Image (cartoon, rainbow, N blue to C red; front, side, top):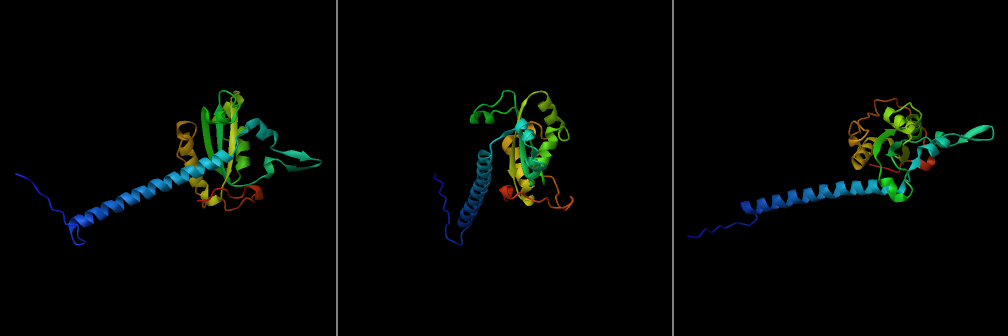
Length: 197
């Protein structure tokens, strides 16, 4: 006794539509996979371009006085963006060492340099300041971003660094910038919107 199955692959047959449906679902899955990988590759490229800056160097260059006027330093570079604060138990000596962080904190701000300064001076996240005062080696990466892309970039960075396993309590991206004060901080031309959604 043999079992024979005849499939009708003509455009009017049921098997034709089943195969067509399967191909569409498969194509959609491949597209989603490709687009999510492309976003991760963009983030990795941005992070490779940003060399971490030590907390000490950041604070030393917070405000540089030139003569009688202040005008240089991070204080005067106002731009929206995200930041990644990295904590090390051993001081990173070479480029590859920066991937060996022990803890991490990711955040966002319309004035990213001022926000990082607050963290480093005790007016931000308590864990950051406590680790800095305890003598851990602390570095920061600043990633400029348009206001509209802040939430997406923060979420992507938290995922990339697995920051919810460290100092970030949430997956990020929850800031409603429309509900916040609508004043736009003037942007430094050097750092204007390198991340776009």
